[in-house]
Length: 396
Image 1 (cartoon, helix red, strand yellow):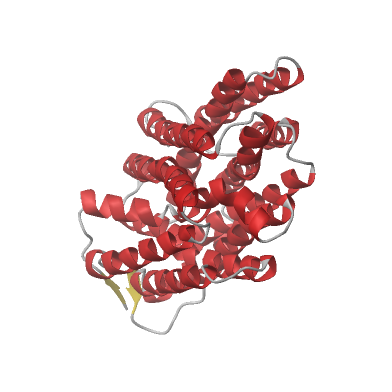
Image 2: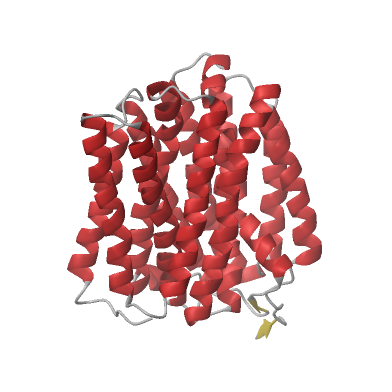
């Protein structure tokens, strides 16, 4: 027997709450990016080791989703979400008192594990509520709210580390976590269809065997690879190569965050007018062109203005591609929605977790490693679309 809860209307509070829950990436990563050089110096470690803390959090998020998503298909969305938020808050508090890179990395993994609840379940709740073009538009709205956090987070982080030690970043994250616990407990009703009989076997096989789902999940993973290549290296390029201050980098990073929000809205607006394949090709082709501009600039005049504008285009299409690929992937499944959301998020963050330290190994004194890696991910997306075009439905 299954009981379907009365679904809430997607009002402003629900949109804001789900958007904030889906923003655990920016909350956990973007806020402390301006502090990376300070953390490196304070913990007496290398830039590659500090960049690895990004991967540690991402890997935690990736693994955590594989447990939380299927768990939510069995017991509903609320219990796993509240458990994750509580652990995220406690881990953020623990990070305040750590001054060893080893323990710092371990706690970042745990923070990622707990924070994955917000990411995987915000997608699942949205899929519980919507389908079709409405789902795409709702994901676009969520990603627009999500895009606000890359604007706010680095500015807030820069302001905090300018006045206070880097530990203040995690004090703030703990406070945000506590507020989300309260908001979710009192403001988020159950949206899942919950089994009241014996627990059904979790079916990863049906999710992994869904060609349309896996195509878009893989495309989203390439988008995340490009995104976290940018996240891991941009602070070092802008501050060391171009000589910007922490505040200057934060302003540029915030403008790029607005680009993600703009790209998400653009995807939502054209979703009913173009085919999936054409939208996806546009989403990977345009940033690849921008990578060519970035490479030419790096090898010739190395202009900050050219670099900033071309990179903004790359980041803007992250929002564009994320909205389209997430909506199509989640719409392609009507059962095991939490499990599908888990696979989607895990694959994306594993690729992002690999990309972050990889770009760091090539050095942070030039932009070329970042440019080349982003171009590789965009090219892989175009190649996959080319080979899958004749086999994948293109109607939305």
